Figure (spheres, rainbow, N blue to C red):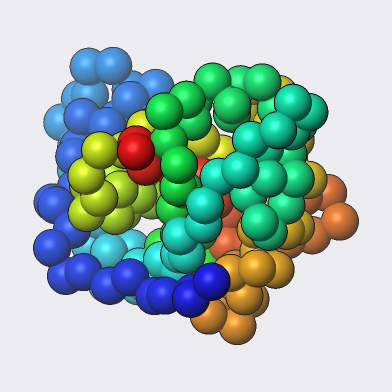
Length: 191
């Protein structure tokens, strides 16, 4: 399959409410709002939005889903892909900046580190939502580790999409992605 890079400059503005939700700051104070402004000013210019993707057919048999790049035994993914004859396989990242800045501030300002992590979470979700919105007649994205879809499927996804070379996304022995503000997912396209 043809692996493609997705780029868009049309990412929506930061959803402050979502950032505060990730930070578990339900009713943010003036101080928290000011801190978020500082975090945005420091982090946003350093983010690198990258997505790589490919489209594959879905072949069902009595035992598994054949996604061409891998055979998967997952009743939860099978249910999510009901009515779909193709998938979009993708990986997305906002880069290493959230990890580096959160690490930098983790000892001197844990709250700032938390807010930086939360901005990274909001930005990767915004990127995935924007990318997924480019397709019509889709099912919700489904990632390794959801339900009974094995987390180790990450290995095949990063390999087939050539993530280390194309978007700088790698996987360690514990199946944790670097950069951490990254997503891999399967999105079904309805027939």
